[in-house]
Length: 343
Image: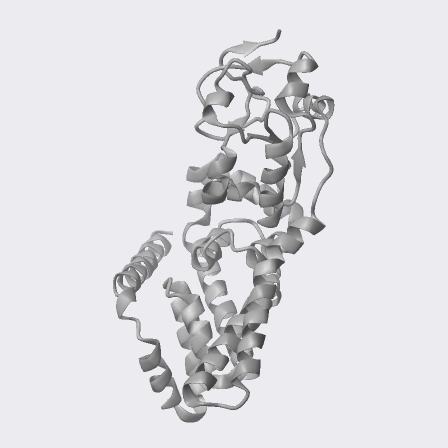
């Protein structure tokens, strides 16, 4: 037992040191020098490249730069294959490092936040991995470690990661290939450049497409009240300004305030709720509809606009709360909130 703890501590030290050095010297990362070094490996170049990609993924090196290099070195077909293998190997190593070295400890310390993330993984399985791979809500390198702290099975994680990293790998690999052709004066530059741009546009459109496919109908105030009363795990997200949230009209008890104007910059704060039902509320429902489109476009699975917003809530005579804006997500969406007014 003691030897195992010592080994785990040593591995953590080695990993942390490697990540710290990679981040500190990231500005000196020379893709051109890397390409020259790998070309000099001859027949072993693909294996060397995949090993470097895997190590770079573990150490938080920029994956996009490595993917572009793979396209420049090996072309659009083999480059995509080698990039995917290297990225998947690196993602698997990071996943295992997190799970072996710290999953139990982090789960005890992180408490409710990690428990919510685990519930999402348990409910969706491979679909959860698919969504976060297709939708760039989290940084790629960090996501690999974060998923290692969940209870998802390794085989499910590896297969879903490989398949759903494919669109991005194809686009960036081809972009790297087109860049090399432009530098070397290859034939058909305009056609290749247009195809590269089309692939990037397709990848950029995927989150919006996912959001449309997962769009949910409006939620009436009576239905929301019933779900809260039943202690359903619903995040009530109030997208009005903070002044309106704490003003005379009040807010739904337990709601979290995140103004619509700040939502694009702060959407990552809601990352743990990708698979959690979210009820979006404003004064009526116009701002809520805009917030719903933004959230579903980012891959959130179960977003509903509260029909009529706070106006309908007040008209129905339902309880409201008044006071300072919520600073954290409550453990229960219908949990107590100071100053509840049941007029």
